Length: 65
Image 1 (cartoon, rainbow, N blue to C red):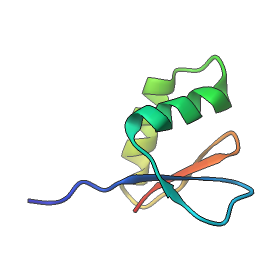
Image 2: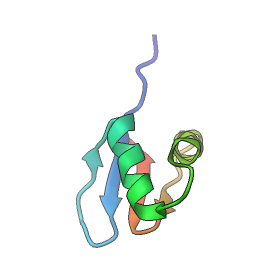
Image 3: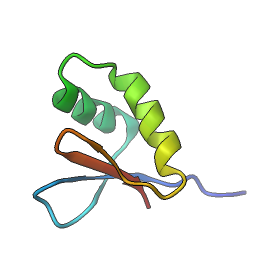
């Protein structure tokens, strides 16, 4: 069975990446987008980062380990 990759985040001014769960990631996305759809954006981020991409939302980057 393949282990699910962990979502990681980093603000533009930070040097290290931090593991986050879905709840924390949605909070970060909501903070960056203010009136956006945090749940829909998180689903997009997760699907896009699975291929190795890094996605930036406001000043926050997301990738998978």
